[in-house]
Length: 134
Image (cartoon, rainbow, N blue to C red; front, side, top):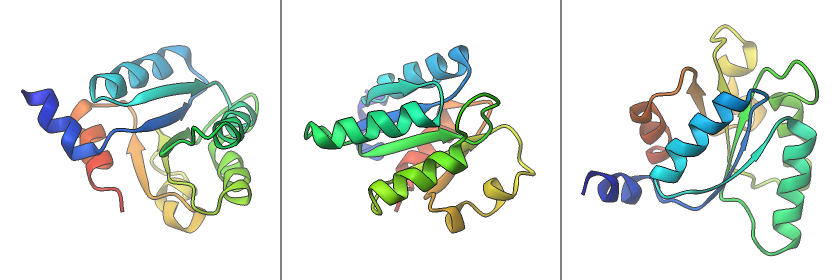
């Protein structure tokens, strides 16, 4: 019963998750799947942009993208968001980070993000972020 209530609150759909750490991606994938989302994962920004483009081209667009801000190897979340905005000005994205002092994290809206998701992830925080997206 609790999961049904949560699913109704977050309006599940298709979500693209980008994070460079395998364990972080898997934890977020499992949390989102329990909430009813269909999840596709990417390791870094270029892969995320390619998957987003592929989803649009195949008629299976993503309703949400969650991008890790810090990616040591490859395109990070800020750069990926810039590419996604050029591809789709209506992209719905959340920025994720464990570094709360990052300028992008502090001013996420000015970079096109709808919200922030702090690491480490907690189900309650995830439900709150997803349930309060504009």
